[in-house]
Length: 483
Image (cartoon, rainbow, N blue to C red; front, side, top):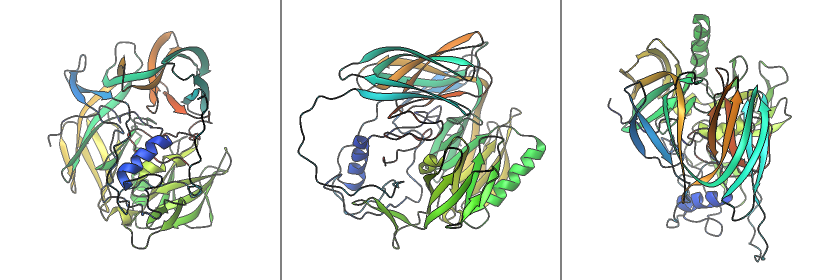
C-alpha cells in the first residue's frame, strides 16, 4: 500500500469549539439554509461511511526530514476555520450532525436589533493533568490584537504561565525526533486504506489528545504496551465488546479498567467504580431531530443511526450525555474525569460502519492489532513498515519514533485564529507552546502524564467535562452544535 502522508497528528489536535455562527454556516451548507430557511423536520442521516475527517480544518502537508531519522515527516498548516458558503436550499438534511440535546428552545422571530457597545470577548485557558485542573480566564477588548497576560498557575509539579494573547495565529506543527534531554513521547505514523479511501495520522499511546484517530475509514486507538496477562484480558474484553447485542463500553481513566454494560432502558447500571453509575434514559434506532423544536425522535424511514441518552452519576454529580454508535466523535461529551463512554452496536456497524481498531503499542517492531471489520472480529500482528490486510481494511505502521516532540512554527496574519502563548518550568527544564482556540496541546514537562492545554470560549469548568458556551471535541473530530 502506497499512501502519501498527510496530517502528522490528529490535527488541530483536537477539540474544536464551535460558535453558533459556525453552526449556522455548517447548517447552511448541509441544509441549504439556517434560521428561516431550515425545514421544520429534518432527519439526521449518517452516511454509510461517516464524513468525519482526521482534521477539522484543511491542511497542507509539506514533507520535511525529521532530524536524525532520515524519515520524511509531514508539516501541517492549520488555517482559521471558515464558515462554508451557502448552498442551494434542500428539503431534507442528508448529512446533519446529531444534536446532543433535546432541550433546545423552539426558534422565535428575531427581535429588532438595538445599538450597543460590544463587550470584551472572553476565553478560558483550561489546563488538565490527571485529576488536577486549573483555569485562567482571559478578557480581550474589541479591536485588540495582542494582550500581555503574565498569569501563572501550578499544576502537577509544573509552573505554567499564560504569557500573552494574540488574535491571529497561523500555526504549523510537525512531529519530529526530540532533541537531547527534551522530555518526549513515543509516536507512530499509521496509514489506513479501505474501499478507495485513505487516511494517515500520528498516534501517541495512551494520549488523551493524540491517542485516537477518527477518519471516514476507521476509528483507531493506540494503547500502551501491556504485560502478557493484561494482554489476554484486553483481548477477552474486546472480543466480548463485539459480540452481538448493543452495549456501553466504559473505559476508566484510572487503572485502565473496562466495563461492558448491556443496554437496558430505565435501569440503573453499576460500573466497577463505586458510586459511578449509568442509566439509559432513551434509546433510538434511527436518531433524527426536529430542527424547529430541537427535539430528537426515531425516524421510521431513516437510515440506521443508533443513539442513547444516558444519565451519568458520579463524583461531579448527575449529568446527561449522548452516545452515537456509528458516530463516536459525537460521543465526546460523554467523557469526564472518571471514564470515557462508547456505545457499541455490532449489528449496525456490520452494515457498512467504519472499522473499529485497537492497537497495542510495541517498541519491538510488531504491533498487535484487534479489529472489528464489517461485523467480523480479527486479531493479527502487524510488523513495522509492512502492509497488513484485515478483511477489506489495509494498515501499515510506517514510522515509529521512540522520543518524539511536537514542533511549532508560528506566524501572525489574516486567516489566523486566537491563541495564547504558554511557557512552562519543571525540574530545571523550561519550554513554551502556543495554544490556539480549539486546538488542544499536550505539554510534556517530564516523563509523566502530559498536561493538556485548551483555549476555549466560555466559563471555566472542572477537568475533562466540557464547558458551556463553545465546546470542544477530541483531536480530528467534527463539531457538534451548542446546547
